[in-house]
Length: 262
Ligand code: DAK
Image (cartoon, rainbow, N blue to C red):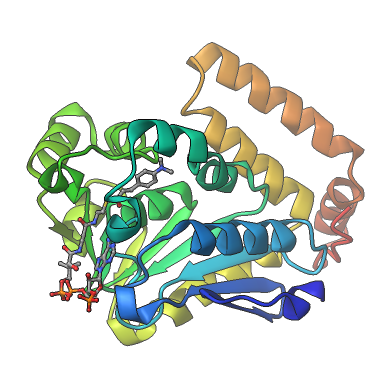
């Protein structure tokens, strides 16, 4: 795989079976997300996304911290024009265009941009130590990478207003209660749990997985009528795949399907 040949300073990448694993690695700054880190992360995610050997990805910050936000020190002195010209969001935004599912495995802080990256992922497994939050208000700004939109869609207006206007961090249980995350596990199990989930998804027929993700994400962007129409077309499209034929044939022949991921 070409991934290994790429020099990476801020993330570590490896593959286990059909799962691509990416670990943020900037421990001295609690994995603060500077532009170089984000470029490495997004490029690596995209490499896995186009690698036929990969069916699902896991993104983690490791055992103790996910990410304490975008790099405050790096952006503190910038002017509005410099921020706009840098257009870093164009890099962050590529995460939502990934075709394959990404599971976030989160221990410790997932604040600001860290929480936003987590919300760009498709599923979230949290350790008991996980602390989510959008604390940007405390440093004189607002979320800049989707926090006001994604948190509001998940938690509703009242909760999003409270969390974003106060900047209050919240624990894994509160995140679970509002539907932001899938599961809470002991910290020592977070990555293993995410890997187990990723392995299950990675063994499903790839085209169906990718189109299911596409259809689910469409639910956040369209009125129901358009979303249903979109889903129907993707459903019909899967009848052009070898795996639809194999899956339905295997059911009738009472055997396990052998996927071609085509
Ligand atoms: N940026 C830079 N450095 C950070 C950092 C951050 N977000 N968070 C922590 N660090 C650094 C600390 O400065 C410290 O460095 P040294 O002093 O040792 O050199 C080191 O990491 C350890 O942190 P602490 O000493 O503070 O550790 P504590 O355990 O005492 O506190 C903490 C942990 C997470 C409560 C605290 O570090 C903290 O409050 N950090 C800031 C949290 C925060 O405000 N996050 C939101 C940042 S704003 C955008 C995309 C994204 C964003 C905006 C635009 N576009 C693409 C347009 C997102 C914005 C944000 O995320």
